[in-house]
Length: 170
Image 1 (cartoon, rainbow, N blue to C red):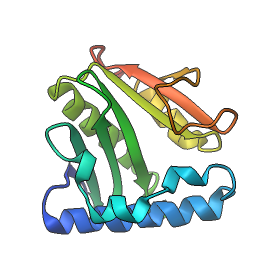
Image 2 (cartoon, helix red, strand yellow):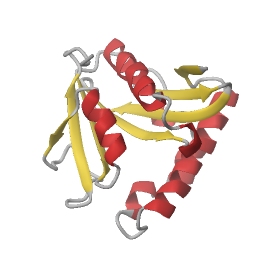
Image 3 (cartoon, rainbow, N blue to C red):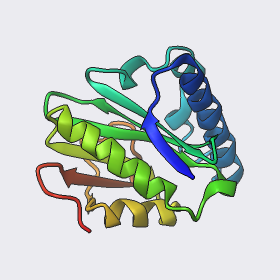
Image 4 (cartoon, helix red, strand yellow):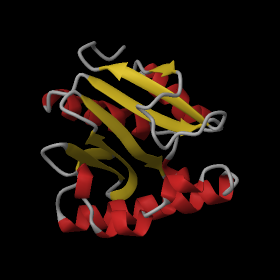
């Protein structure tokens, strides 16, 4: 059974910390560390302060559980009153194939819409093809690197955006 909810209780925040650390280890094992190590600059400070910028009212932290065990997370924070950025989307390798990423993304985008956001941004490593497919199924489209993506690196990151006033494709 899959459950997806905002991570607000201390135990949920601890589970998200563990998932983000697992994400970091997975990225470092799967993707050359030299590609863009700045993506994880200040990670331990971010984790210590969770929910931090991902907390209400301008952010959201989502935790997915598979059969009661933490399986995935995703977050957003506000760039401004109308734009949010998705961060830290991760599903544990052993929990993949259950549609967890899609369901987390649906919950997160609904939270962003409810918060009044009209645009969602994200950047992702160019090798994360399964994640890109998930984002595109949700309606995201590729966009050029711009000032909207200050941490993105040309040739390494794929930048995407979604107009949140539009309905998510079925």
